[in-house]
Amino acid sequence: MQMRRIFYYFTENVSTEQQMKRKKKSSGGRRVGLQVVTLCISTGLVLILLGLVVFTGLTAHNLSKYVKENLTVTIMFAGNTSDQQAKVACYKIRNKRYVNHLEFISRTQALKEQTEALGTDPSEFLGENPFTHSAEVYLKADCANADSLKWIIKELKANKQVEEVTYQQDLMDSVNNNIRKIMFILIALAVLLTFVSFTLINNTVRLSVFARRFAINTMKLVGASWSFIRAPFIKMGVVEGFLAAILADVVLAGCFMGLYNYEPDIMNVVTIETLVITAVSVLLFGILITTCCVYFSVNRFLRMKANDLYKL
Image (cartoon, rainbow, N blue to C red; front, side):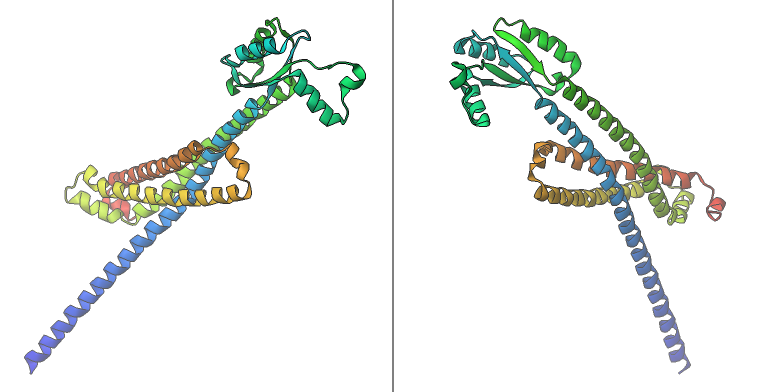
């Protein structure tokens, strides 16, 4: 009878200890899982901001290119220039390296357009067509600036059939100045946001590593090398950075789809290349920043002595 009681007491204590161990493992697993989720969400939010800066910068560059390529240089041909001569001159100009495309406007077409605009035919009371052949030249974005226009205008005027070359100089100067200011602001914002994001992610990662500082010290005491101790943390950092980047890319993709549904013409300045570069940049930022933060955080605890771990 006494032996039976001892047996029951022993089995009950063993089962109780096993239950306590299971509870500790399950609570520890939930805690680690919660830390991973928190890190992914907080890192993802920071990566969304970085992705917006990259997307805005690329879009601003595309917008400046779009605006520059829609600024025109107007060529007016001499009154005695025949239709054939004007077309030959336009063909030569169209092949210039600084020309994006060219639109030829004949005298007949110009008269027709003005008649529709004014509601009356000017040739009826003038006795002849008062318009001459002309052409609208759309320059490439790299050449739509004051320095390039000086020699471009000079080269166009060298043609014998060309009588006058005009362009909106004030508008071009204003566009170029505004674009430079916008790009400067975006670059400054990108640098500042990168620094802030690195700091925020570093603090989040450091808290995650801090919770396992005693495990790091234990592995160090049994003789494990620093690289061996860092390896699982770095792998986890890569996974967490990848998941956070995927989360950020999904949110950014949803925002862009909403913007596209609201304004489909946004595709005039946003290209597939812009979207791909933004997504890849967010992915690389997420993995790189998280991995670097994990590396530095683990090294910090590896350099600390065991007694210092209790003072934190």
